[in-house]
Image 1 (cartoon, helix red, strand yellow):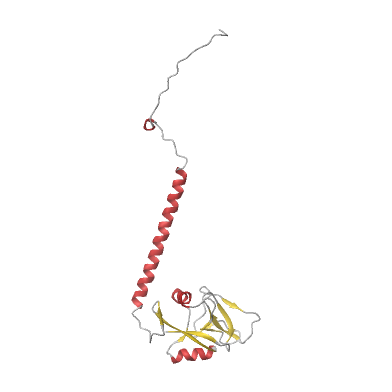
Image 2: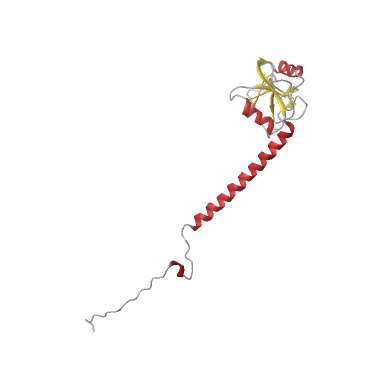
Length: 189
């Protein structure tokens, strides 16, 4: 038998994909799970943004009926702002706001910050109602409230001198400057 050839008949049965008893996992099913999670996360984030915007718009719509004194004032978020194009010292700017029955801008919340982003140029600085009232005291607003460093930080130019005790704002930061410098200013109602 060592040289005999053995023949055998093999029968193959073709099964349709529906006849398998156990499902075979697809190699891309893991990617589908990840994409599903990312999609759900994006939907949740978008819903949160929509809710926040609707709250912001509804809170503004109740206060937007306020009228500013004239067309030179800008209404934003229920507050009126005057951006002056002349240049004066901090004290002169504060006095000009007083003659308009207002005060130099006090930055309290996101509405004030968003006004800066939307209405100021990138490179210009404006006087606001923030200063160091006396030597050794902290930064204080013209309404005697304390400065909140969570909204903005103050970039203090070195060397710090006593004449550097008033604040100017741009779209991106607040800097301490000499109160005698001549800059534009922002009044707020």
